[in-house]
Length: 435
Image (cartoon, rainbow, N blue to C red; front, top):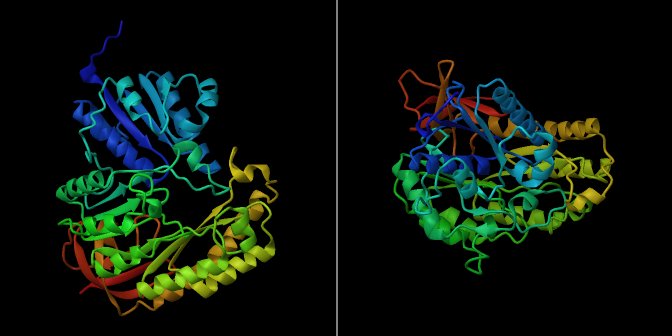
């Protein structure tokens, strides 16, 4: 009979989906390490005997990827290569009852807010005193910092509140403590994430406190870049821009998903804002922070979207000339506000519309990049691939935005800042040399 001891257990955490999931996995890893448990993240060595799959349930493609990953781990268990498979995250929170029936080989399922229960199953105690303790899965010079959980918005297409619940702000002192620990670990850039950044503080402080939080974060020694992700446009607190303008280490960068520009679609999506109000907001943002980089995301193929709506959206892009744009095709999600609507646009047509939108943005991005030739930027060196260094400007976030290909005769350190003069431009990337 095979026997094993607790000391022999090694836990591998596999993370799918967004940066919020990544932070959850990092916190789980920190908790396990504090309990003297051996833990790795997305290890390919196969020297572990327990797997935790942290799933995404946002859209159809993400759900399918999560299910496929679970099935792969279950297959390894059947082959005797794993002892236990546990599943957590958004997909598990939303479809637990169905998944338990469909994949009974999984040893236990946990929701997004059930880390203490997952730790208990892993023979570990949840240590509340470990504020900010994480095992980073990112390179050591940057990290994501989650300032709240859940969302109170009622966007018709979104299932996030079903999986992560209502908005819950993390106390400011906990965020500051976590940021200081990250800076102490050598982190130079933090990316603030939440389902809705601008709502921060309303629940626990009865007012929007993101500007106050930014001022305190900007005073932390060692943090050279602070980046804002996922700001909701409706009732946007303009005070954020005042802080961005006055603090040098807050990047002139704003990730603000708009989803559409047609009033018909904005109303159907329950975005609580009109096209005119969006245009006025963008004008105010650009006036308060000249040269700011604005990133947005859009949805193609929402129920009832017409060719006129798509034309209005592409014309809006041509007029507003965003620096960064991402496009998703609409995913028909159960129990959302839009689920009662007929999903009347084929997958092929959704993809065609998304491509049409991105072709417009591709031209804009190329034109904007061409304007940068001859200009010098402060660039953070992220990695070295195929003999070349790759970095980012303050106008680019990790993975989703442009990169700078660096030519250098000298050895550069990953995580250092260098001044780069741009010599070439492409649709979505730049090339330059060390000054």
